Image 1 (cartoon, rainbow over the protein chains, first blue to last red):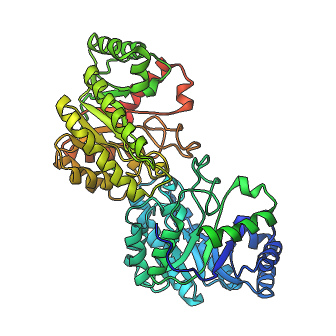
Image 2: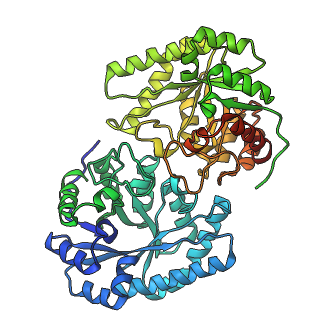
Image 3: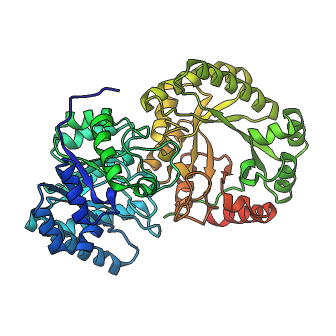
Length: 276
Length: 276
């Protein structure tokens, strides 16, 4: 595994990673640790209220990297599909209010319909909200999810599929989000990273680790260095592809959530510098 | 989803599916239910002893479809890699003794080495045992495993990767095994099924279902019809690809294992006829 070039200090933390904290507590703690980027989850913003969240963020030195997470377009119910589009427009409003340049899209899946059909509905959903995103100047980042989430969370399960979808939509505001947790196993990963990077479609980069063994399908992610993902190798590919944005730490972990969040945040900073 | 042609009565059950039973009990029960194929797991054969297992199987009307499971080639330790090759040769001896035409290969992975390196070791391992398999006339079936098992169980995680490996090895006794549980999410599945089927490389077909939600990474498989896998559509592709072998029911499920195995077996037969 290659180490790649030294990485810039582009650490960003997702509020879900330290979910015990309110948005205000997270902003204070991240700033105190010298972190420069924050990705805001909707629950954290809703708890404080969007207006208050905006003031908290504006008063800080932190850069808002992304708002998380829109999408969930497919459904066997047409009224649910329309409701999803409305919900995504509301999230775009919130993203604009918070000053986020990007809405992360977890595209969705419905076990009642085929994955091929779900992918068509995802494309229609993205195309339906793109004019609104364009009016607000907010990017949509298609995040492929691990195949173990193909039942209910996303019918987009490889970077190749996400790149194909972005190419089919062919809009400068529509690109992809790479999360190592979902994609590390894919033999085509390097090629697909280069493909989206060279086209300016690589909008965000999420890091964590895959624990061995992993004991829960959702909430057993590891801190960088705790698992088997070749993080430095993947970072090298991402940088080679021209990406120079933030490295966003997004960890769902009952184990880490149960800890003192200040201690955990210090470990996040250390792991970012030494294991990613 | 297309229903495809009526399927032949080619039901086969893996002994692990009814693991409460000894091999003798399983053989009696499968025969009583009119099942014609059995795939024997090593633990079931070892419990009875290989010689006794052979006599039990010979005395039955059941056809031995496969012996499960060899492989696990990659390791950061060269002595472990040699031990794996020896172990696979022993399993080929056992497969021959039991009258199985096929050894199913769960190829292995080691979180200490890269997946690319693991794939090289898998190819070397398969090539090392092929002359022995040839002497015994036993086929080796590369079974790609779901990407959620890429940490420790297999570096071969799509049918495309398995087909590439079989093509690289290019030996008439080396082909692939399709298990819907591992592969159902893959947009390339139909194309890759046709690819291996048309080349005579599709050696076996395993069925079960993906439960929604799935609560355990290993032992929460569903009976056909209990989940979201498009089983009839995939069967149609497999038949279109020229496969006319058994449809093997391989279910790891704490929930079903806790039931009366006779009741469960009746449900397996029903689900095979109605939901696969």
